[in-house]
Amino acid sequence: MYIAEYFAKRGKKVLLCEKGTDYMQRASYVNQARVHNGYHYPRSILTALRSRISFPRFCKEFPECIDDSFEKYYMVGKLLSKVTARQFELFCHRIGAVCEPAPNKITRLVNPALVESVFSVVEYAFDSTKLKTIMHERLEASSVQSMFSTTVKRVSRKESELEVEVNIGREDSKTEKIIARQVFNCAYSMINYTLAESALEPIPLKHEMAEICLVEVPEELKDKGITVMCGPFFSVMPFPAIGLHSFSHVRYTPHYEWYDGPGKSYINAYKHFDNVTKRSAWKAMLLDAKRYIPLLSQCKYRESIWEVKTVLPRSETDDSRPILFRPNYGINGFHCLMGGKIDNVYDVIAEIENLGLAN
Image 1 (cartoon, rainbow, N blue to C red):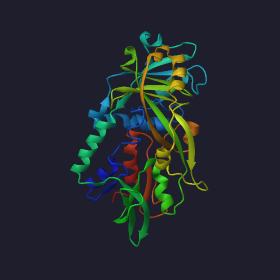
Image 2 (cartoon, rainbow, N blue to C red):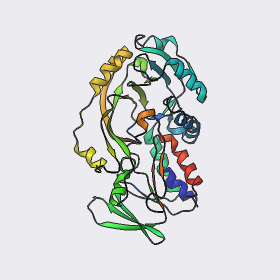
Image 3 (spheres, rainbow, N blue to C red):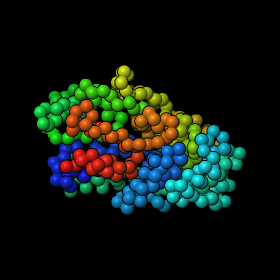
Image 4 (tube, rainbow, N blue to C red):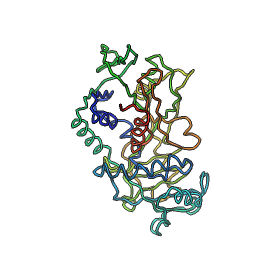
């Protein structure tokens, strides 16, 4: 949506095709709703620094969507953690992020046998429903045309232009053709769908069937967000869209994984999502988390939201979230993009300009 508005403001005629019946109903909604300020990436300085740059810009541009009403704390685990408390402090100092010892009202809540240190930080959440409404209004104001329930099936070059084949409604419906100068494939877990249908080599991607639990936290934690890191731990964050907290766990949120790439059979992520049985791992999440913070045992489970989470395979080693940007991928004028966080869209625009694609 942001990229479409950007091009429309530059005088381009823009058509935005969305597979769903509305925007931002999948991964933009089903996540921790975290506006990253760098803390999450002590093993990827580049990702952390990009977050530090994007954080104030995103908050300034979308203040109506920001929830900054809660206190945020990062805790470093004693066992299995990939960083020590001292390393985390040095990392925060290096990227210029606020990091102070947490007050006693918080430290007394944790199990000191499992938590080395607790830090008070500055990090916010965003309301994806409000963000969607704002972007809808901005797209209308910039004259972007939208087509919903539309699957972009195939892209090919026809002389100096691109021919885009789309199915409106059902995927097996009659194919319609659209002519364009450039096509941006921003389909997240479905990026390789269009590539496979266009006889292009798939991009190596890792997919996870991911569960985020939505819970009511005890009164003492309602105005707080907590992340235990950096390892097989968990996070409890305000989820502004429906007034609950999201509960996610590094070990239990991803139920299983699969990979796209050269030599691998392509799996349609959406069809797979629709067809598999989803069994909540809430009890396992809570059982582990309450060892660190006993008060979490009082959480009341409300529901789980599910999505296919997609990352670059390299993220397994350093937890980085680089933007995937493959310009002119197999076809001149056909570009593939995938962002890892809601607030790194600014990096995409900068790269579009650097590559001269906005001309």
